[in-house]
Length: 77
Image (cartoon, rainbow, N blue to C red; front, side):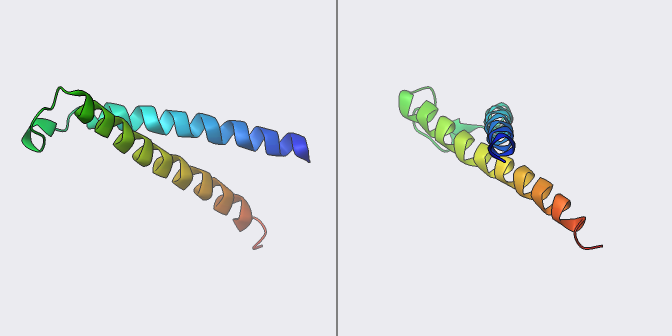
């Protein structure tokens, strides 16, 4: 039982890291210079990291929930 939980935890960690990387990649096309006074500064980079982590976690959470719900559907029939 605990082995299965370990595998699930590892998959969730990997999904989260992939989601964060994907979010960072996707946010590179956003023109932050329109919204921030110093888009090359440390505060702008920190904001991009925080937004990437939040979006990446959301993506990973959605994929994890979707996989869980898909497995639950087999119990319906």
